Image (cartoon, rainbow, N blue to C red; front, side):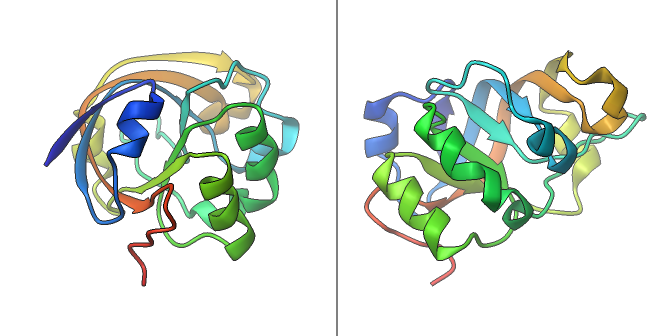
Amino acid sequence: MKKVKLPLTSDVIKGLKAGDEVLLSGPMYVARDAAHKRGIKVPLKNETIFYAGPTPKGAIGPTTSSRMDPFTIPLLKRGLRGAVGKGERSSEVRSAFRKYKAVYFVATGGIAALLSKTVKKSKIIAYPDLGPEAILRIEVKDFPAWVAYDIKGGNIFK
């Protein structure tokens, strides 16, 4: 298991390959469908977005990433270096992760209560009116995930 410090750096990204088990620690944004439709207007250079829906009770689990595919390439162009969610992405988005030297991580669905224990801080950054779909800035410690797509074209789903 590799420990990965966020925000991501080029050196860290170069050392990751599809299938690697990782423990993510550091800050990342949380955003899903409604926030993506409004626009992710936060600094993204070297950042990671977790596609998740936190609940009022504090649980936080990954949501299906492919729903964010229409919005992903513009975010990668703005400097996004990582995304965490569940499920496969379109071939266009997979290619964009390679092109922009970014990594896609997958987290296990159905363990939102367990994943919430890795969240050390959480703050609403944008769109508070969206409730659980507001953009959050969280700080995680030892958040478990796998590298799904690496910068060399590796794909955990193949």
